[in-house]
Length: 119
Image 1 (cartoon, rainbow, N blue to C red):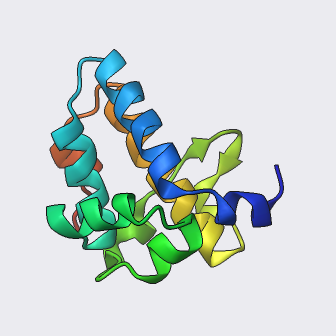
Image 2 (cartoon, rainbow, N blue to C red; image 1 turned 135 degrees about the vertical axis):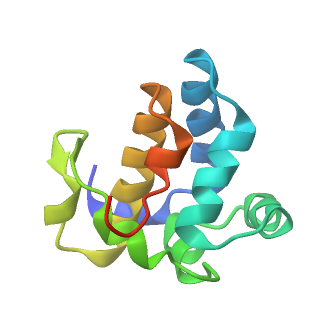
C-alpha cells in the first residue's frame, strides 16, 4: 500500500482495529486512548470528535493539539519497518502509533510505553 493511500485512510476505520488488537491481548480501550492522547495531545472529547468527523490520517495528525516531543524516543520495528528510520514525517507518526499499539498488545507496561526523557 503506498503512502498516499495510507494518509487518506480514515482514522475512524483504523481506530477500532487498534482497540481490537489491544483487547485480544487483555488490554483496554482506555489504554489505547491513553497512548493516542500521549502521542498526539488529543483529550477524550477531541479524540471522539476526530473519529466522528471521520478524518483521514493526514488530518488527524495535522490537527493534533500537541505531538509529544518524546515520540523521538520510540524505536524498533513495526510491519517490517524500523520506525526511527522512516523518512516521511507523517508516515513516521503513523508508524509511531502502530509501534505503541504493538507494545501495548505485547503486554508492555503502560509506563514504559509512554516514554519519558532518559528511558
